[in-house]
Length: 413
Image (cartoon, rainbow, N blue to C red; front, side, top):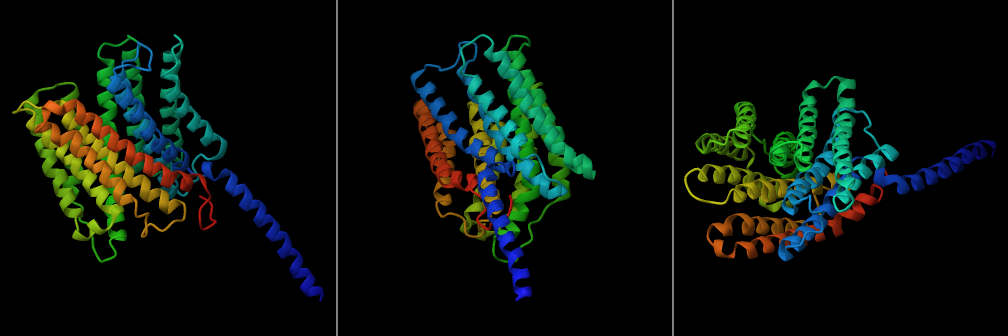
């Protein structure tokens, strides 16, 4: 009897501790890892920002101060608002796996999230102090992300991951250049800052994609398959994309840009070929990534074609942005969120096929149809925006509860 009592009491005590820990976990799950608040931010802002852009574009009335042109706001917020939120969520989560060191969570993570949020809201404040404050807060956000990501990397001396730190630092510099231009301190600063930031986001996509897409494909197909990666593609695509970015932004010789774009079509096409397996079409979390990557290749094709035929430069831009970045980030958020909330990545929500199909259709409408129906250009832009909004509305409804609630398996994360 004594032994039974002795054993039972600790069991009761541990049960109470477990209950307390479970309640605590449920209350703070949103701030456990970076993917939770920042994927939530990306999903909600992907919905809200395009809804606002559709309203401003359709009715020709800005909700912004006159010193902030609506087209500059749209471009900036899709790069430094939507895309950087996705990148932040992915990197702050991935670096914990890579290094084994806990990244910022709890109140520091909340503070970082609020920096991002305040920067989005301040753009609509008409006071004269708002724009300079916005520039400081928004740039500070990216700088803090850079430090938060880099600290675990330095601690374990994973120098190869400093490539991401470098890209985050370039994003910070690009954002500063953009605001210096917007505030009138730097000629063409808005243009240089936007394109520098945009191509840096693409470079991050290439880097992340090279690391995780082959892994996701091999693990997710359900059949033996080894995704092929070619070292010559990895090295040459990196340097050629750097040359392409510099040439397109600083030295816009259309034939030089076209030649570099054509080379990148071949390199990234070879990468897709090495990753392809016909079974991906049965897996929503796989086909979205490969289709998104294909849109990037289409963007390079349009960049090449623009040197020889008269087409809008915005078609290539949106092949990269809407089709490429939009579909790849959606696929990454869908897959990472499932895995890190304890859900089964091999049985994702069936609605994902519809969400990704809407984004694909929107990219077709925004990029391909204007080549043949230019007289309906304005209407096609509105339709593509509507398709994006519907896709992100469903995406948010499905994934927001997952990001807020504790893991389904009870583990921390």
